[in-house]
Image (cartoon, rainbow, N blue to C red; front, top):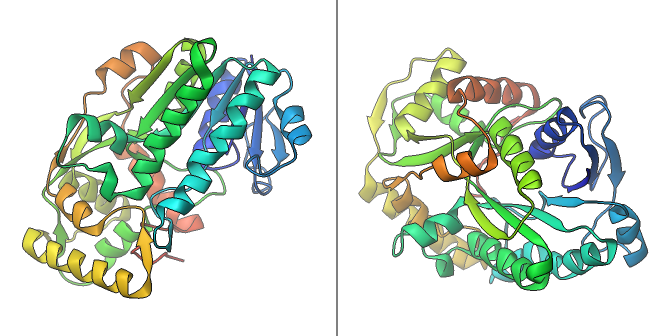
Length: 333
């Protein structure tokens, strides 16, 4: 099959293109800027184009002959802007579906795979704890899938991969995990939240995407997980990869809430909003937000993986190419 990957030159795009090529598919990676030299898998065609704003004929040329489109682009939870930030998230995540899905129909591409957020899955399973109305980023991902489902109708397949924390390292690319490494290398004890979160490797995401390409029917949401890990375990894997032996102490939930309230006040004074409500993030980090990966694994055909090795690869990539964490945290050099 001929598969167009919007966002294909990025971190997950690299792994997805590699999996598609290994399975014998033709892969067209679409990005906003050329990837680092030598950083794409062999045989991948790279196109530089902003599919959100390009001319209709340019979009049609990209989609010509495509059997499937993977949408791995848009603004993520690190993004911050003037309040209300939901408008900016909608412009980057929701509105693009209004031109992409009709263009796919005109081109005869019958299968769309969207890389989304696992917080939309949690909003279904953890009602009351995860409230999309308070968190613009995952709300935009819910609206994105709703629009895609509505526009696709019964004649197009739409499968949404709801992605949690992702680990791994790709050639020439940094990661989002520099803030954790900064925390572990700072002097003094390391405060660790008491919660649990779903985790996955980038290779598992790529394998799930390959499975969704092959699934190619109906409309479905797939919570993608590998293992449910405590923050203590995640921090321990990072520390091991760094060769560090920090003193771990339990984070103080009340102090975390006070810090979140202070952050909300600072943002409000500046007229800025982030993708997540800081107060909710503080609660989530003390909660069990694991998920059952078995249904997606069985349907899409991806397997369990070694998260410790993927975190070690994350550390290596971050040290080589840098890492930026959530919007409230500084980036590393």
